[in-house]
Length: 384
Image (tube, rainbow, N blue to C red; front, side, top):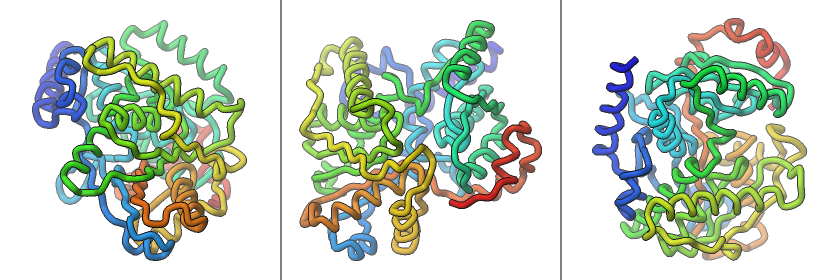
């Protein structure tokens, strides 16, 4: 085990030398205290969506292609990407600092975060345990479950949060090498991935790859992506408004706003505590727009507007979206364009979904090798 950890430490050092985070470039003192592993292929490209823009009548629509965060593996292949690996660069590095050998995380059956955690834990030689809950069935759920098992994740299904939390605590109490990452990687450490992403965007604006966006559309679920963007944009001096499109109904009034504010504050306070030159900032109420129009009736249940958005995006730009998350900000963007809100504005869609075809890996797995409680996702009808 000591030899294995030594190899991982060598990987951390070499990775940091290879790809220093934008956060550390702007605030060098942070790297002395905050562990980081370069897992992503950064910066991700910014591309004008000319065909899609023409269709909706907006000429300055761009995409931040975080579907391409996954590292090149040779032969034109990439590791799984999306927005989650940005958080895992900090989360898994912190896990290794705590001598973790097993990564435990939460999600629903088709969780993109759980899958990303399994992929990158495997890359680092760590065991992963995915503690999942039920969600409406879809081809994305099937794909992600099969890819989870390809990367040797241990899958467990739970009826609710309370039972799952109790089971996780028992694992943590019994195993000193276990490390828990919360749902979506959304805690103060996970926020850093998108503070870094916002600084990356600022660098691309300085390089004239895009004018400063008037609006940035992004899906928001567990909220660390939105909180990190808001914090990073503010420390960069950018005035872009973040249109955070909620992906599920709120259980309590203002739930999303409360969580985003809390994560913003936690991330800001942690960075300031490590490096006093990182300022303590007021929460930017005027630069956050929470769009709750496309959340649907329950998590993971696709909405008609999202289905239309997915088909149009595939036809016009040959980029794959999915109905739980990434299709919803595009549906919101199309709706705002129809209301003439985006006329002559520079708009950036931050794509959080990795729509790469991994069937060459999933075809190698038989669903019957999954724990029996997951078989129904492959035996019941998929309607979305």
